[in-house]
Image (tube, rainbow, N blue to C red; front, side, top):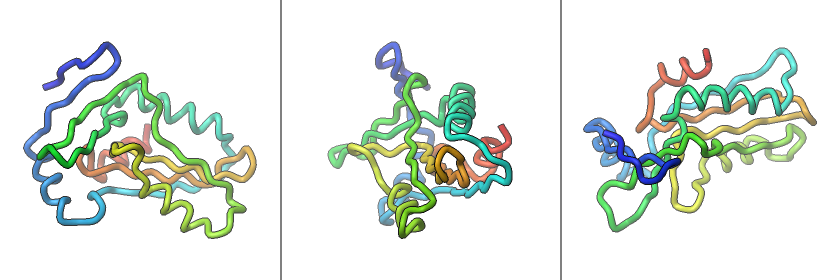
Length: 151
């Protein structure tokens, strides 16, 4: 069941599966997730990749879901905002410790929130070379991620 908090933000009730996954994850240092790396064989600009992601996010609003994590509640507030930009990082391929920088970005939470989808673009100037996608298990599985990539 969805409840409107405001015109642009929608609060979502937890499903039984989501509540179970959240409780199971509390004993772990990181949430359960599915992650994939896409390497482009033909050049795509940063603008093109961002636009493609925005189009998919408009169709799949669950990808804009976020959790407001609070230690005072058993389950965090789950909400989404279709107008909200997705959370992405941009790293240049020439950065030293590239793998560490990607991992650091993918494991970062922003202001006590947990995003359904994390995106990291690895670019070489204006061209995207790699696209790292992480989908938190509370909102999807490997098949959901494969569907996202297909779109």
